[in-house]
View (cartoon, helix red, strand yellow):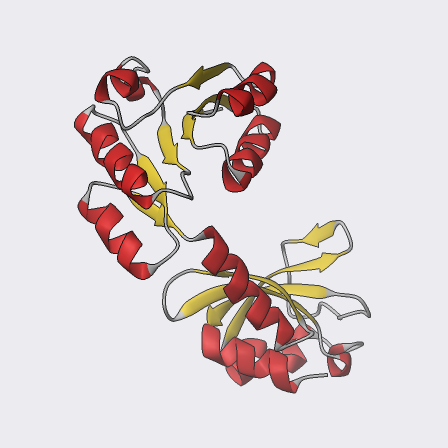
Length: 217
C-alpha cells in the first residue's frame, strides 16, 4: 500500500483515484471545486477543497508524508506548472504531472516533475497500433525502440512447437508468457505446442514486432 496526494479530480483524476483505491492505497484528493469534493470525498481517506497554487494551502497538506504526489490538473496548465514547482519546493518525494503536449512535458520537467504522463496521447498511440493490426491486443513502450506486446498467435502457429517456430531467430522477439483465457503459462519449454486462442506476451524491437503482427494471419 502506498499513500498518494491526488490534485485535480477531473476525468483522469477520478479514474486514477478509483484505481488506487481498488489497489488498497491511501489517497487524499484535492480540488478547488466544492461540489466535486463533496460528492467524491466520502470514498477517500481525506478530501480537501483548496487552490493548490497557494503555497500555504499546499504546505498544510504535509506533502513530504506521501509516497507520491500526482498533479492531474487538465484544464489549466499554468496552475499545473505552479503546483508542480511548489510540491518540489515543499519537499515532495515524487511528483508526477500530467501533460498534453511535448512542450508541456519539457516545462513540467524543468519545474521539477519527476515524471510526466500523457494519458490522452498514450491512448491515441495504443489505438493507432491496434487499428493497424487485429492481432495486437495491447502493448507497453519500454523506450523508443523496444516494447512489450500482447498478440494473438497467427493461425499457422496452431499445432506447432515453440522450438520449431523459433520466434527469437525468425522474428526478433522473445516470448515472455502465453495466455489461455485467464490462465497464464509463465514457464515455457521448446516442446510447448500452440493451441487455437493462445495469446503471447512478447518483448523485442517495436518495429519488428509490429511488422510481424501486421503480416501474419
